[in-house]
Amino acid sequence: MTDAPVLSIEEADGVVVVRLNRPEARNTLNPPLIEALTRTAQDLRRRADVRAVVLTGTDTFFSAGIDLKGEPDGGTLSERRVRALVGPDLCRAWEEIEAVTIVAIEGYCVGGACALALACDFRVMGSGAMMRLPEVALGMNMSWGAVPRVTALIGPARAKRFIIEGAPTTAETCLAWGLADEVVDDGQAPDAARAWASRIAALPPLPVRMTKQAVNACATALHSATAFMDRDQFLLTLTTDDLREGVEAFTQKRPPAFHGD
Image: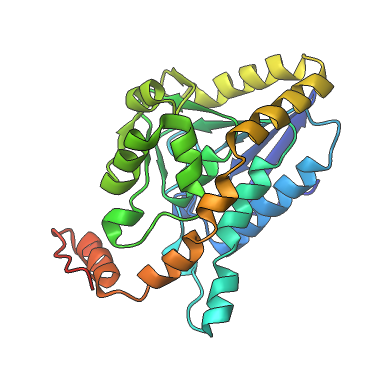
C-alpha cells in the first residue's frame, strides 16, 4: 500500500496505523484527503492479513473537520447531490472495514472528522481532547450518516443534545456518554490505541471479524432507513439565509441572528 501525500501509513504485526497528514491545515478534510481515506479503507477491507487499524492525527489535534475552502461549488442540483456522497461514502468505507478500527484522538475532533471517528469501532481520547458537531449551530443539518450512529452509541436524548447544541464535549463527558471508550493522559492516545490494537491482533482473527460483523448488523440495521435523506436535507440547508448568517457570525466572532429562512 503506497502512502498518499495527505496520509502516513505504517504496518507491523497485523496492525495498520493511518495518520492524517495535513498539519498545516489542522488536518481538515479536503477532497484529496477524503479520497485517500476512502481508498485506504477500501483497500484495508480486502486484506485478510490486517487484524486491527488505528486512525489518528497529530500529537496535538485530530482534525478540524471539513475544509470549506476546498469544497467545490456550483453545478446542477444533480451534480451537487453526487458530490454530497463523498462524506457518507467515507464514513461507510471505514465502518465496513472487517478488521477492528480504533481512533486515537488528541485535541479537537470536529464536524466531519467526528462523524468519521464515530463510524469506527472504538475511540481513545487524550484527557484534554474534545468532540464537536457544529453543523446545526452554523445553520445546516448533520449528515454523513452520523445521526443514527450517535443515537446508537448514546441514546436519543444525549444525541439530540450533542448534535443540536453543537458544543465542545470533553473527553470525560464523551467517556461517560459512550462516545469514547477510553481516556488517557494527553499525548498518550496513539500509544494506548496501538496497545489496544495489538491485544486484538493477538486474538483469533476469524471470530473477531465475525463478532464485529454480527454486532454491527444488530446495531445498524435501520441506519440506512433513517439517514437516507440526510444529504438532501444538507443540500436544502445550503440554500438558506440562516446558513449564510451562521457562517458569517462564526467567522466574525459574533452571535448569530437566525430567522428560519
